[in-house]
Length: 204
Image (cartoon, rainbow, N blue to C red; front, side):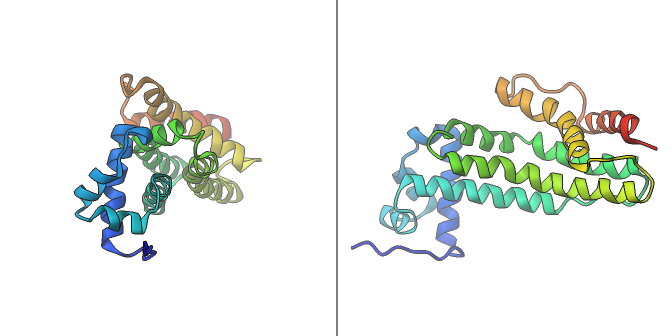
């Protein structure tokens, strides 16, 4: 009889999830096997199944773990004190760094590829990062508008427009081209250009 382990702080669980993440990214869901993951994590196959009784459960744990990593990145982003241009550029450059990270794209590709198997999980994953970043940005825009520094009637629309100017060159183009087409501008330049366009529309 199998005894299932539910201790989220168990280091063996973390080791399994870390190894599984790399296998799912490089081999895909269908190509990933449980035995190599157990071996590389330094545990027996029985121990792996005690934590995760199926590959589907392990996959969900991997995506949740990636989401937690993304949350840590988001929580570390703080707007600089200063004029709107400086604050927005600092914030949106951090967002560009996040969205332009090759690992982030790899996880998104993995979730996209398995969306038909894990539709609810995929939907939560896609909305989580963008909404968390967006919430911070909307709060910034609301505060700047209240201070008379911007003219923003709908912070959610304005935040989506600014984030969209970042997402297209640093995330979506490399995502669909397999990283074969990368932006010629630096992340900082992309952020500065986006903020310049944004302020032309919403600045006072």
